[in-house]
Every structure is written in structure tokens, then in C-alpha cells.
Amino acid sequence: MSSLVPIRFQAFDVDAMAQAEGRVVVIMTPEAKMGPAVRRANRLTRGAVARLIESDRFEKVKAGDVVSLAWPSGMAAEALDILILDRRPDPAEARKAGAKLAKLADNQPVLVMAGNQAKTEDLAMGLALRSYDFDAHKSKEADQPAGFTISHQKADEVEAAFAPLYAVADGVRMTRDLTNEPANVLTTTEFADRLDEMKELGLEVEVLEEDKLAELGMRTLLSVGQGSVSPSKVVVMQWNGGDKDDAPLALVGKGVVFDTGGISLKPAGGMEDMTMDMGGAGVVAGTMRALAKRKAKANVVGLVGLVENMPSGNATRPGDVVKSMKGDTVEIINTDAEGRLVLCDVMWYAQERFQPVGMIDLATLTGAIIIGLGHENAGVFSNNDTFCNAFLKAAGAEDEGAWRMPLGEAYDKQLKSRIADMKNVGGRPAGSITAAQFLQRFVKEETPWIHLDIAGVASVSSETSYAPKGATGWGVRALSRFVQDNFE
Ligand code: BES
Ligand code: MN
Ligand code: ZN
Image 1 (cartoon, rainbow, N blue to C red):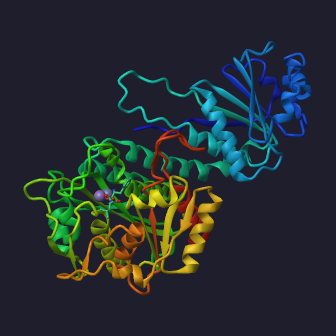
Image 2: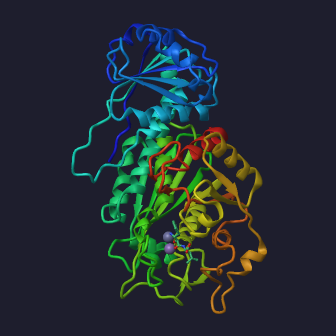
Image 3: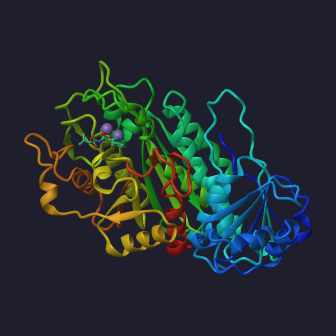
């Protein structure tokens, strides 16, 4: 498992700049206003910063850019990084700037001379998010990052403002680790064990095993896992930081640790990507971790359905009819449309047991959402405008792409089955919407509900502003903020 990069705060002191090793960062506005750290850097380098400002090159420089001077004379550091940033940047600008610095750091110690820069806690969040590297399976021991020292005039205040953000960054880190982990390592049992460890943080964690799931009637969930040697499990994580009498918010995650498609086998090309098909469960886990670590004053319950979708002699066949926990029967036309079969039972259980004030499910549910929205936005489906808009606002504030999609009676008709209450697929048109319609059949009228199809955003093949390629941890920040803004 990875760990978060160390980030320390200390009182602002320009005298530390000359001797600091590794990299030294100073911050300058696009209008080239020199603060004390920039002035000192300029003096130490005998005017190199002033020459930059006067150069033609500087006219092209804009907020968010970093100009690096290598092996600056007069300094022990191997680079002086001049970060161009407004005095009062947006949080997202500050985070992106931090992420850029993190990428440059390359495990060296970095001294960030932040002066009295606003949003330094967000800059630090960018450092924490982008310093991630999944090297658990590289046999050559990788260098550990030396970390960042942030020198600020109000170091204590910035450190306090950063503490809850660092907790969220640790949730994001956990989600990324789980999502990046290969399926031979992250079996359903290993996944449940890693969630169980979060008891240390004050979460209540229960692992429901197959016999219990059978007793509860979670047959559609069990039908997905029955071809695998890994036992199916449901894990329930409760964070009770709010009033005892308040009903919780429920988060439900699809945790298919590997999706071969089952008997409706997927083609070989790209099948290895299906190690990330537990991404929804990963986000639920990371969010619960974030809430516990920042001691959120709210009641939230996270439930994940952990299964492996494998073909075998006792795997579910296309054409099988299975009865859900709710009691509705499903004709399984395509065993590769398995996520909805897992979620429908866990969602029903969540509502029956907790009567939540709202329910949000997350799933790498459909390839179709990638065709529709690419890797920039998750698909958002909801039965409640107020609930949905509050989530979209939180996602926007966290710079996590989320775009609302429609639901409707006409789409629901595509799920009609000749022999059962519904089919598990609705044909090619509007594949992401019919998947959401399937789920909505398991949402009670009175439950405000959001379905997040994260197939396009959970793991990506090129780096994003905040993450290297691979798992992004999309959703942990949005959900943590959604809880904070609406339930604390
Ligand atoms: N896990 C996949 C969806 C997916 C695809 C996630 C690509 C991430 C990247 C899901 O279980 C699936 O196989 N969906 C099918 C549904 C179809 C059979 C109706 C799909 O999208 O093709
Ligand atoms: Mn599938
Ligand atoms: Zn799947």
C-alpha cells in the first residue's frame, strides 16, 4: 500500500532559501509583483529572476505556469522553481499549481516559499494528490519522496486548514490503491480485509458472508459471483459522527473485483482493464476513510458488493431467471451486465436496513457512458433535482467532472421481459440510461437517489491534472464535500 507524501509547515523565513537542498519554489503573480521570497531569490541568483521578467519569454507566461532555473548560482538547491500564481487564486487553480510542483519534485525535498499566499492549503492539496505513485508491485525498491516543506507567514493557520484536506487526500489514495490493485491480489477476501482494517479509524465494519447473503435473499448478487472461487461478500461500513437520531446518507458501490463478462465472455483485448471494475466500491471505501479521518459530523453508511464475475461450470447462464432480494425477478440475458445485479440487492438492503435520507450508488457500470461522456465526466442520474443539484455543486467545487443524464418511462420499457419482471439489458440504444432505469426499479419512491456511472473516470490511460495515469480516485473529494455542505 502506498502512503501519503509528507507535508510540513514552518514559519516563513527567507534565510532558509540559500542552503535548502533539492528544489526551492517561490511564487510570483503574473504581473511580476515580487514578494520577499522572490526578491531574495533574485538577489541570491544575482538578478536571474529580474532577467526572466524582462525577457520576451515572460510575456507568454500565465497563471499556473512554472518556470524552472536549473542549478541556480548562489543557492544549494538544484532548481529554483518560479510558480506564477495570482495572489488570490481559485482553489482549483491553487491545487493544479500544487500538482505541477509535485510532478516536478521527483522525490527530492522541496521547500515552498509561500509567504502570505492565499489558498496555500489548496496548493498543498495539489501536492498531496499528485505525489501518488502505485509501485507496490515493482520489485526494485523505489525512492520514497522526501516531501514538501511549506514556509508561510501564517503556518499554523494554513496547517489547520490543510488537515481536513489531507484526510480527504488519504481517502483518495486508498481508492486509487484499491482500484489499481490487480485481481489476483485484490480478491473479495483481501478487499474485505482491507475494509475491516478501517475499524482502527472508528468506523463500524461488518462483513456479510455468502450464507448470510443467501439468508437475506440477495440472489441476483450471488448469481454474479457463483462462477468464481472467491466468495461473494457485502461489507457495511458505518460512520456515526452526527446526531444519534439522524438517518444516514447511504453510499453503495459496485465491487466486481474482476469482470470477465462471465459466460457472455468479453473479448481478450483490454480485458485486463476489468481489474478496475470494483472502482465504485473503491470510492465508497475511500470516502468512508476520508470522513473518518476528518471526523465528519454526519452519519454515513457505505455498503459495497464484492464479487468476481467468472465463467465456469456453475456460472450463471444467459437466459437464467433470478429473484432479487426485493422480490422482482430478472431474466439475465447477458451475464456481462452484472454490475446492476450486484447493486440492486445492495441498494435494496441499504434502504430496508437504514431508511437513509438519501442514497448514492457508484459503479463502473457501462462502456456506453465512455462513448457518451469520455473520460472527463461521470454520468449522473437522479430521481430528485434538489439532491442531484447539491451533488453537482459539490463535484464542481472539487473540479470533478459530473454531467446529468436523463431517465424516463420510455427507456424503462426497453427492460421488458417475456418471462420475468425485467431483463437485465435494454439493447444498444441508451445503454447507460437503461442500466440506470434498471437500478431505479430498486429505489423506493421516497428515497432521494443518485446513480454515478464512473466507468469513464475511475481509471484513465493518460494523466489528469491531479493524478498520474491509472486510478484517479474520482468522487472521493466530491462526496466528502457533499457530506460536509449538506449533512454537517
Ligand atoms: N464493467 C463493465 C463496464 C465497463 C466497461 C467499465 C468499460 C469500465 C470500462 C460492465 O459490467 C459491462 O460489461 N457492461 C456492459 C453492459 C452490456 C452487456 C449491456 C457494456 O458496457 O458493454
Ligand atoms: Mn460486465
Ligand atoms: Zn462490470
